[in-house]
Image 1 (cartoon, rainbow over the protein chains, first blue to last red):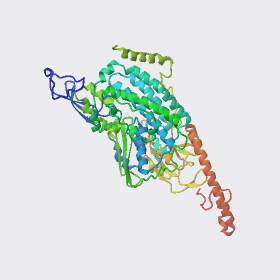
Image 2: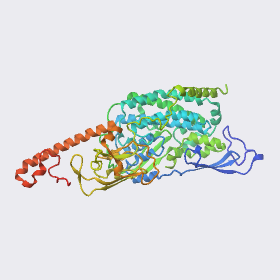
Image 3: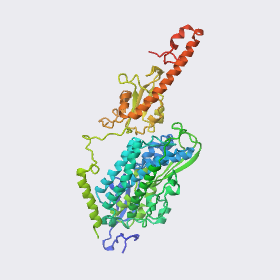
Image 4: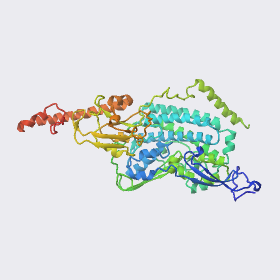
Length: 386
Length: 217
């Protein structure tokens, strides 16, 4: 007998027998809980150890980002976008720069477009490496995989630091190009890292992908159906893990992505294991893109000579700039009324929208499964709460 | 075989453990503060004010209190008060100067926008990151005496960038001096017709334009 109208889908749903059936227990997981990746709270109702209800509670890291954007200049918002998803400041910068460039009709030199792609793909490597480490940490593989992942991530952060001056708060893109040019030494270092990344992925996969415990913990856990994913607006690796072929790099072909040959990996089951594997496969495609970008990077200016840094006043209008961030579609919607500040500044955060299906994924699973399901969604609270 | 994936993973861990004894790529830990890594040249954390020389930092600040950085700073951590009088800068031209220039480093988010918007190359990013203090209010609010650092120091932390800035400033000053000399020569040519008492200010070779008043001492 199944208690309290529980959904019985998925291989890992444990049956709750009436003999042991007691009262439902409400547990507040978080906001100060290491598995929630920040200050996020899950109000879970438990029947034994099985989740029958889950209410995500967020807003603990709310920093008034969008209102701040309306009260600072267009340039002034750029460093704040670093602090949205603080793992991926380069892609946040690009999405915001793209929105403002659309609004103002600002062209971008070819070299800057290529450099943006290089930085975005390095960011994707960085983010997915972190996720692979954290997911293993969440599933109980304490320390070792996370430290191996962070060792590699640190190399990418070193590259970002030597280019932009800061490891995580890069503040690198400008409207009409990039802030500084990449030196030949920097490009050589980045190319060396890219060449060696495949070996790291091979080692990491030997460490964990075939691991029987990981498979038992993740396969069939937190299955997301493609129709629910589409109707809930899920984007990014989480959507592609369900088998839906939707990648903004292909659909929108922003920047120069149409010039690059790469494949979009798709999942089959939409479970936690697929979400992990999608990230590993995407990293391998990112390496391909990076190799092509280093090969084709043209010489030339990094900044449009007509671009203005100060006193930037786009004409009245609106624009939505979106890119395929490592976590999904990151978009910025701007309305200009001709003043130096945007009239409306809106962020479409992939983390928040991907988080909305958390309850559907967790119902019928145990508390320990909820932790790895949350880990596989890949949230950063800076972006969820803004 | 069940468990083969597990054993394969353990082999990787063992390889890393052994490797950490002889392979620097597998042991990346740096024992800070005894060991330190070299900071990249582009590294930035908090702004400082560039002065031309170390002996008289307040007298040779490049800052002319134009307040652009104060306006553009996203978290608004800069506070400037403009001087009422003008003092000669490094090139001898009379300029306004900041009587108060405060940066609240507890608010500053190291975004570098003040550096990018400064038209006088007067504010640059520092690399001092060991700034822990027991006083969170006054010790983190830096005034202009604490912020001023000589140009030589700028050369030691950002050598490439500083060389570019120096070359640009030298070219600008040369152009300004030539312009001033041309103006002075023009004024000198027109002098016989003008009042004789104004002759001193427009002497040829002076970098001061003939039309400006001599700087107040």
